[in-house]
Each structure stands twice: as C-alpha cells, then as structure tokens.
Length: 592
Image (cartoon, rainbow, N blue to C red; front, side):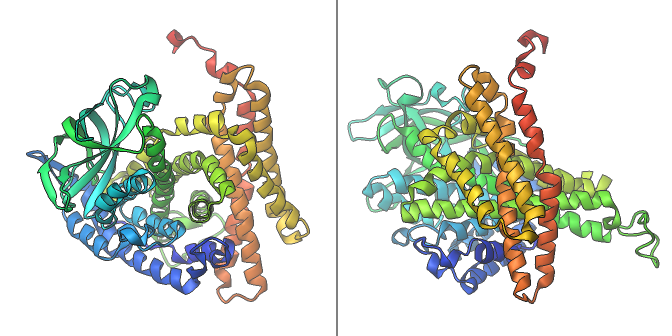
C-alpha cells in the first residue's frame, strides 16, 4: 500500500528562507515564525499520514453509494471527518468571528497540500465548503453570514457549487435552471445540475448548495444569471434545522478517479433558495468561489505529483533490476537497485524538480492572495488574477504527467492496482478538467488576463523577473546555471506576448491557437523564477555554514536540472506559438 510523508522541511524552506514570511508586511504574517508554522505543519502532517492516507485506497475501492436518496461515504470517512472538525482544520484561515482561526491563507495552502496528497477525494468535502463559505463571506448579507458561516466553518454543514447542467459546462449563458421570486423574498429553484462534487453525503447534518439560476425576465445569456443559497434542510430563525428542501441526489456518477467523493446529479424541484449578492450578478459572486477553487485545484496537481513521487522514489531504491553500466553498485546482491540507471534518474528528477518548483510557485501565489485580501494590495490582486489560470492549468497538466512518470518507474507493477500507483494518475486526471478545463484556462489567460488593465499585470510580472536578474547580476555562482536560463526563458515569454499583440488583432485564431503553449511557457518561467530564488537562498545557507548542508546541495542540484533540462521547453512553446493559426485550422471540419 502506498505511503505519504508530509514534505515539511521543504515547506519550511520556502516559507522562511525564500519568501521570508514572518518579515513581510502582510497583516498576520508577523506571527508566522518558524516554530509556529512547524507546529501547525507537523500536526497536519501526522493527520495526513496516519488518518487520511490509510483511507485513500479504501475510498478508491469502495466509492460512494446512493441508497434511498441518501449517499453513504466509504468506510472510515465519517470518523476521519469528525477528527478534522474537532481539530479545527476545516477553518484554519476563516475569520474568528465565525469560528475560524484567522490564520493566513498561505498556511492553509501548505496544510491543504498535505491533506490533498494523502486523500484528494476526502479533502474535497471540506475544500468545497471553504470555497462556498468564502463566497457567502464576500457577498452575503449580515443575516446570511450569521446563519451559515459558523456551521460551515466547523463543517457541521458543508457546501457545494452548482454550475454545470447537461447542456452547458463552460458556456454558462446556456443554463436553464430557474428561480421564481416568492412573496416572502425567497425563490423557488427548479432545474438539474450535474457533476456536483460532494453534492450529497452522510458526513454533515446539512449541505449548503450555491446554485446558479435565472430569474424570469432577466437578461439573456450570462448577464441574466444569479446565485442562490439552497440548503438541503431549511434553516429556522433560531438556527435549528427545519424541513427537508426540495433538492435531491438523482445519481452518483461513475468516474475514472476520486471515487471517495460523491459526484452527484442534483435535482431541484421548486427548492427554496435565497439570493446571494445582486440579481443577475451571479457570476461575480460565483467567481469568488471559482478563483479560490482554481488555485486549490492547481494545488491538487502538485499534491498528487508529490505523493506519487515519494512512492516511486522508494520503489527505485528497493527494486533490483540489471546492473549499472559503470559497474555493479550492489555487488553482494543479484542486481542493482533501479535508481542507478540514468533513465530512472531522469524520471525522478523531472518529478522532483517540478514538485519543488511548483510548491514555491503555489506558496508565492498564496502570499499574493494574502496581500490582496488582508492588505488590500491591488497590485497583488492583479498579479494573482493573471497567474490563476497558469497555476491551475500548468500545475495540473504537469502534475498529471508526473504521476504517469512515477507509475512508469514501477514498470508493469505500476499498472497493477495492488501497487496503488494508478490511483494517483486517475485522481490527478480530473484536476485538468474541473473548475474550468485547462484549454479554457489558457483561453482566459490569453484572451482576457494579458490585456487586463492595459496589460499592467503581465508587465508587473516581467518587472519582477527583470528586477531579480538585475539585483543578482554580480553573483557569479548564480549566473550561468540560473540567471542566464531565466533571462532566456523570460525573453521567450515576452516574444510570445509580442506575437499575440501583432497578430491577434488581425487574426484572433493566431493567438488562441497558441494559448495552451503560452500557458505552459508562462508556467515554466514562473518555476524558473522560483528556482532562481531558491538557489539564491540555498547558496546563502551553505555560505553561512548551515548544519544540514545536504538539503541545500540537493536543492541546488535539483534546480540546475530544472534550468538545464526543463526550462528550455520555453523555446519549443514559442516556436509553436509563432506558427500561428494556419497549421491548427488547416483542415475542414469534415476532414477530421
């Protein structure tokens, strides 16, 4: 059975030696001293390894079951959920006034990686609740906040987001669910939603559905969509639960992965709902939840890559097969461990260099969110808005690829369910699809985010890279291995942006045909920047006589690998972008 150990040392390195969190001017960060974050991460790591990981295979093999309209979660999930609630892990970064601990989002992100790596399907129940609570916090009335948030923070009530319908996924302007106004100010919601994660289950006494629907007489298309709070059980004025609402689970989808999470078809048959935010402004309210969810999904790609890598690394150390070409490394055994072979090393280094770079990008993104939400920093808000499709799309595409590489290390044993490696690949696959498929993320990046606010945010990103390069240009130890590759990759990204500016207005397909390549190019530059920052920190630690020099030397070697072997992919992506729309659009539809 696979195992998981929380990568606390690496998280602490990024938090305190790269981002220097306790020295930042973000409200709440002064308390993030190393001993504080270590205590939180250590305890979360124990829960991930000892409670959640053993249930990962259970959830995968048992799945969820619909019985007489009620969903039964896998064995052990309910008890584990109670343990999570009792420990306060479900509300780590929510406001204290509603029962949260008000810790920064960056710490919640680090903890979330651990929980997701150990059991992605399980962690989705509380993750979706957090997103729904954030939407109510941002757009709800004071009465709605008091009614729902304390119970949701404690996960006594959980939450969902209901967007997709059979005839519409990405194009929500096509949705048909209706919300008819009632004399008492409520609405009667009628329609069907599909692919609703955690839509029905037995781990909470109530489920608070956030549902997109149309108010009759509103504008056509996306401009006529509103958002509603539709609880499974109605809530009385005193906070107690009332009658069952007219919302039911009609079916649990049979899926490739995340079997432990109930993905439901939800039927609303005149269910009582309450407007969240303004009429016909539902997407504004829902995007509060969706943007948080997209960052969280990017974290899922990283998390599945991490747990798959850990097990592949252990297998490569133990599995005996063949001899090293330079001579036997295990002369007393019948063969050498496969980690002596260069191609196995390549597979492991691809994984390790991606994971450590992605973790730094993820935590940096979380810092920007804290700067925006806690400090009101508009520049940080703009930058993280730009980076959201990159974090979601690039980290999930690459994260899935890394689980495949980890499975490959096992050879045939990776294809056998007994090893557990296929689950990581199957669970990682959904992250490329939900919360906006990655192709849509790429279109959003190129079609909207690049030009947002006159291109101010992408220019701010380029300035970050230029400033780092300039500040460190005299560091000979960094130059050849880190600064020069980062400069070349950044120039590729700028050249791609210039191509879109020159060609996109004349032929929009020329830009959109290269959008996925641009998203990956951007992602590589983000990882390259963070690897350069990590290399600087590691060199400083070694120069200062750090006692665990092996950690820092490994960090530098891993960073050099990324810069030499992975970052040059930016040139390939640029070449594809410059090929324009013609190769992509050449065939008539009938010729496919």
